[in-house]
Length: 408
Image (cartoon, rainbow, N blue to C red; front, top):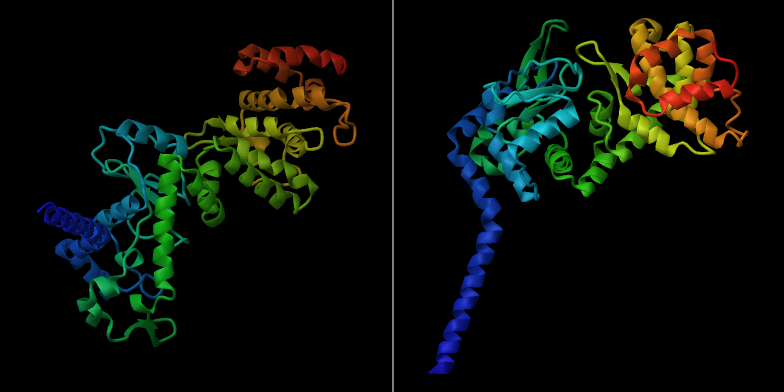
């Protein structure tokens, strides 16, 4: 009797295990199958298939509904890949940190648009990126993640999930070209080359951007570094996120090399990364980037400090060589210039004092601040009058200028 009981119990455990396995294996399939129950999604997909992909010959329109029907799909992809949602307060803080955008909790808008081509633009766009006139990311204020806007065929295998809609792409489509005076065949979604690879890349971008930004996932940072480094670069260059040393190094090395390859005098153009005017015309200083330079300057590497020192000369004498889009000497006020000088001196002078015995690359006879104190003594007074711009070392640095030579 007991043997039969054990057999029944064993069979029951096996059946339960099989049921759990089936449920686990089919969880994604079930969610994907549910797509067909979404009539709005189906209707939008029908229209997108009729319209075809956007192109010069085939401009298409996308609205809020096009975007919103993709949200459940994108959330499902995030959850499948281990993304953990954070709370609203933390999300608001991180959007400010990474994109320098403030989420107004009293504003009824559900989304923010982060414009990579016009960073000061605040207008919402729902059209997928064309990477020419439109490129940006949407922040979902109440869903706590970010994503680019995608057409449905760019994120799901519509040909297998909605096979019954294949008739919409059976016939070739043509449009009349008024310039060439002829009919031109336009692509259907099924004609897009490597569409499956594009879908996979879109989902990877979605997952790794969100896991890095909101889950602090270092594996995702590594993936972005190799596969989506333009996004990381924009976080620093456009929005001032300078708290990630790996990104600081990647961007600074790249921008320095890009400029130095044009000629030695272009080295100072890296200053555009450190000192910028924000959307309100106010000076912003990237302290994290300056800290990176301070921590990575050595007896054998002073490239970035020398470049910033050269920039000070342009800041006061004008952009004689026309290196910048906007002459720094005209771009900043006298007070802003003094603040920039103070922040550079705050890391340059201690480094010179530390490494001045290494004459091979530390051959400057005087610091940038000392030379400026001779040619523009009013700068020292401005720094002093503004409480050394809250830089704790600046008072001592100015006092030590006497050791380099007489200061007026």
